[in-house]
Amino acid sequence: MAIIHESATVRLTNGTADLRAAEGCFVTVDANGVPTLAPASATDPLGVVHVGGNGANGEPTDLILPNHGGIVGVKLHGTPGTVKPGTKLVLAGNGTVKAGTTGTHVATAVKSGVANELLEAYLVPPTPLG
Image (cartoon, rainbow, N blue to C red; front, side):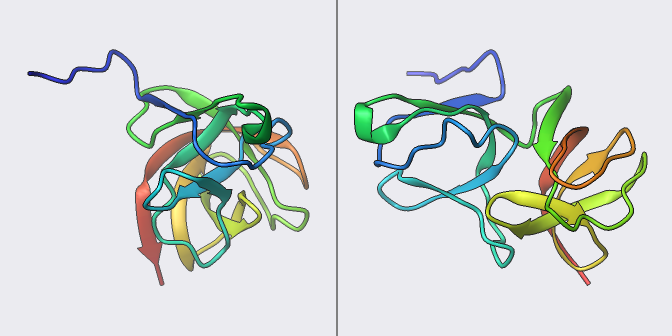
C-alpha cells in the first residue's frame, strides 16, 4: 500500500498540551506522538504549528513540515537579534526562533522582524550550525 500526502503537513492527535496560542512555534514529538514546544537545545523538531489545538479536549494540532514549499509564519523569540531577509533562524526555546549562527537552523527569514512577531519565513530541514 502506498502512502501519499498532497501537502507537507501532519495532524497530531496525542497528548494533552494546549497549543492553541502556539501558531508559528516549532515542536518536537516523542515516541508516543506527543508534541511539546521545542527547546533551544532541540536538534530534531518535527515542524511548526499551523493550527494548534488543546490536546486535553481532544483537539488536534496541525504542523507544517520542513519540506513545505511555501512561506509560513514562525514565532520570533523575545530577544531575536537582528532579523532581516535572508537571516538564518535557529531554535531559541519555547518553540520560538532567533537570528543565529549556532544552534539548530530551522527557517530563513524573508522579511525583517522584531521581538515576539509572527514572521514570514521558509522552512529548512533542521541543520546544526556552528
